[in-house]
Image 1 (tube, rainbow, N blue to C red):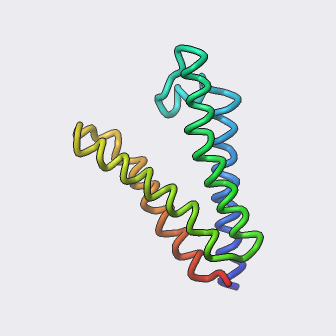
Image 2 (cartoon, rainbow, N blue to C red):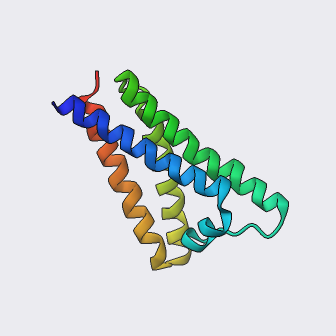
Length: 123
């Protein structure tokens, strides 16, 4: 039962990441309104799609593949991505002290812990 819940959670996390990837790729104005980054030039739009979209797409692939294959090694991929995102935000928070950074840091920390817990239940 725990394995089924773990795989279901990983699949849901992967679907969340697909939604965020789609937002970056197909609706950048909405993405900018919700999360802040704006693309004022075609190069900026391409960079958002490549870098941020690539981050979310890789997270989605890792989480979905780990759930599908019941593979704890693959589950390390989304954990690493989210941990690196957390580290980048922590560095930004240290530089600026902007309290707006804390909420996404908390989400990333919780996701890393939950994916780690799910990982412990995989084969």
